[in-house]
View 1 (cartoon, rainbow, N blue to C red):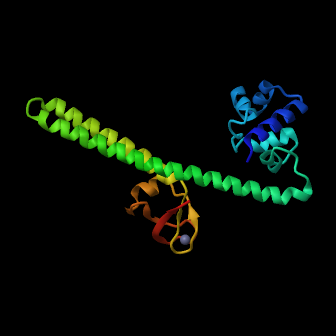
View 2: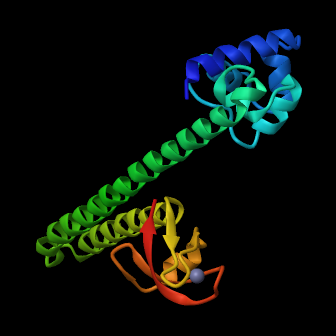
View 3: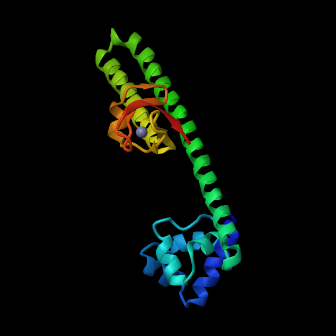
Length: 201
Ligand SMILES: [Zn+2]
């Protein structure tokens, strides 16, 4: 996916349709800066804005991803290429997110133990300070765990061991589920059975 090419295509289409960055932003109910970012090839339009944008420009989503009007002959080929590319991008992002979970977990643990070991020798002389330090360490630990778990919930999918269905469970379901590493005991929304579900990308 060529962001620069897509950006130029968006700018060209916008001018063709007689929009300024401001008037297009207003039409799509977003900031001018977003349009400018798309056109400079910094990022893609948000998926929620894509249908409206394509309608205004009178193009297909496939044209948008290709950065050009795709003729009917090449349409299917380009569509497949773009779908693959999108899947690959999501996979990479999920991988990065899951790595971040480890980092967060590590920071949480280290902070917790650091505060704990610092607090112990102080406890005899200044119990209030030691308690405050202990609580601070614990809160940092809990916040890191919360974000770690949130990442685990949204990155990739859980795969049902019974029917192979992949799904993203609710945060609550992930929070209360028994787990071994990232494998969690969850109910499958498709077959309704509970199983040990692996995290997959
Ligand atoms: Zn299932």
